Length: 161
Image 1: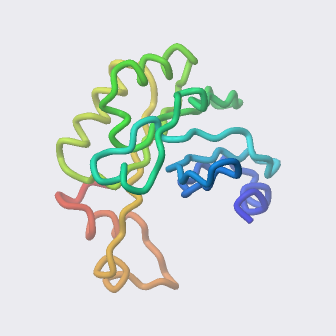
Image 2: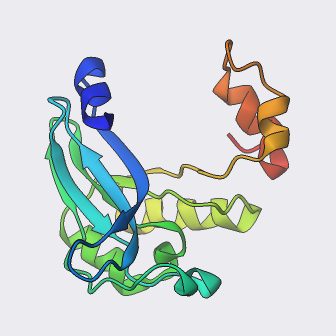
């Protein structure tokens, strides 16, 4: 379904999912990368779930750190507080990432500083996407006329878009 949407939009798509391993049924916090042809280009399983996430998701060994070559640059990134792991960031920089994706549920002002730091340290563009939306956020927004800039300014503390 996501691959088909990527194909129809002729776009690269990065999305977070909960993945269940077929061998041992472990759940992983996973980022999937789809290409403009709809194909699954790669996946990254979160290396170290943060805090109470460890009650749900398993740990990865780092072998899924993904870097996708595109006409726009190399796309890759880390999930949520993995971005506070210096060696994981260095591994992504060594893969030549120039478009760094950083999905998270963190919208604190301190997170914005982290995103700026990664952009400077890695000499890359950073897309910090907050995947956390509350019912209040949805109620403040017309679903049929979605204006994501206003949603972000309304729902994200400090109005960071």
